[in-house]
Length: 330
Image 1 (cartoon, helix red, strand yellow):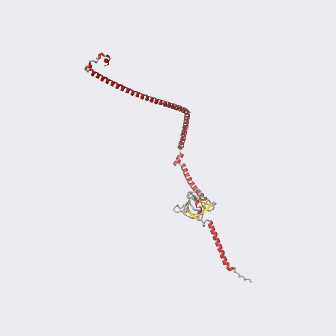
Image 2 (cartoon, helix red, strand yellow):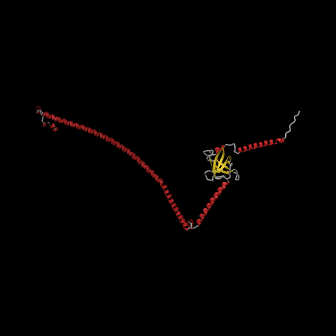
Image 3 (spheres, helix red, strand yellow):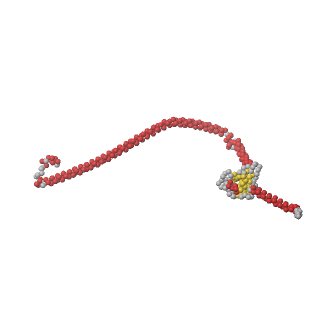
């Protein structure tokens, strides 16, 4: 037996279908937005903050890209006037992706430039060509330099033109004073005496140069003479040196001989002194012998004289004149 199907009224389900479609669209839009924000680095990335003071924030706004060699590494989070400094400076607050932290050091510099061409939007570029000693941490400041785009070039050209105008005015004033004979410079330049003095000075300088040339010629001649005489002088000095050396050798030999002679004389004098001492010894011994002989003779004479006085000997001793030799000795 066939079952009878119930009739469905699609008009009753239209509200449900519309709600489901809107839910799908909202979910898709949310997903797309999240993916876009994540791709742009707005969400889903870890960031840290750096600051920098620049001269002008013209062309910059919140969300302006921050790049390193064309690679997006962050964005401008805030722009304000710098606190505590001149109002000509603008303070930038930069949100930098943490994965690029090690690239930015204390030697890195920040400047404003164009992204692609002269009509594209401005971006912040960080130059990391110089390797620093310290990596910048959260809250540190980046050094900034002049912007490098067409506006900066035109501004610099305008400043140079203003300086040129000032120089032109100064030059015009100076030329006016040069033509005015009432001024010191004009009277000096328009005076004939100045040119006459310059002419006489030139003549004196020319004469001085001529004298200097003559002096240099004489000096050169003198040096030539010295060069010619130098070999002879050196030869004479060599000969004199050789003679002096020979004389010194002869004096050295003579000194040696004199020393030998003095040593010989010293030896001879020592020997003579020894002989004199020996002679003195002999003379002393001879004197002692003579003195002892004299004493013996005196004692003998006294003995004989005493014996001769004895009565039984007196007549037996011969007289002196009977013995001539003894008489002569006495």
